[in-house]
Length: 336
Image 1: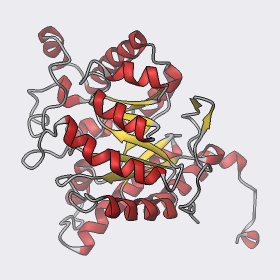
Image 2: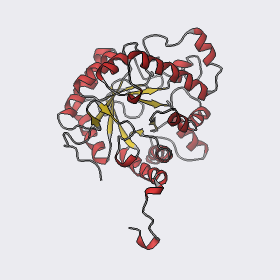
Image 3: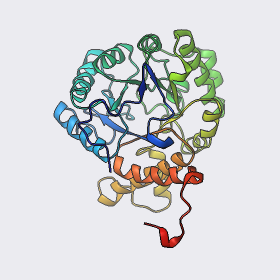
Image 4: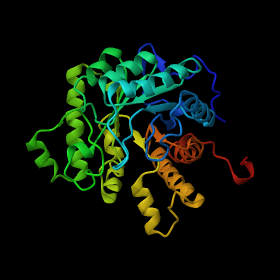
């Protein structure tokens, strides 16, 4: 079913210093990135994995369930109240021991979820492979150069919270970055733009930063940032833009898990959504899994998830639809 945990040397998709970001899962399928938050205050799992042993236990579980990579984060991005800025040394102290412990047991790909250059440097030195920057290289002016120097791939996220700090959907989030990434003129323009156009304006700036730092385009994945400072309608419109990201020549990294706009869709259709109930808790992940099926059917390269087993099933359905031409043409009597 999954990938056995103790597989040193088996799972890295590296050739020399080059990683094929379009094939992080075998046979052109959508890869599953398991979320490992080593924080006390993350949205749905804060405090559950904030020791090395607890984090290792969860990592082993996700790998056994079929995760192709793990995303390790030491700072919560949950909406206020509850999340707090984490200083650099504290964040390093959270993520590096976990990465080092994992590297003693497995070569699974690891991304570090940070926008701070010093944290990224420490994580890469400890054995991480990828930088997952939710500020799109705009929160810390050094981080693109850190990635370029290390030859490390970067996940560049569109962050509407930074682009529209006065928007009602942004004000509930913590601030990202060491300073404003945009001029007053840019922010004024951004406030009026349709969401897809705003996304591309931000990506253009991020990609320019990457180019100036010497970061290869082949080492960049784009994340359209659903769930961050967007209205429900905007989240849905962004999901209609997946093909445009591929047409621009970039692989896609998509955070699908436990997004509030999905909960809103369930609620307006009279499904139980209270996470304190078993039904409500499971419904969140079921809705998220439907989004994974959609993403896989559209060729999204990586989905970022909490419940790997459920999303593995969902991705299998979506992959089968997309790869239908490669499927054996069995009749009903020949099905397994």
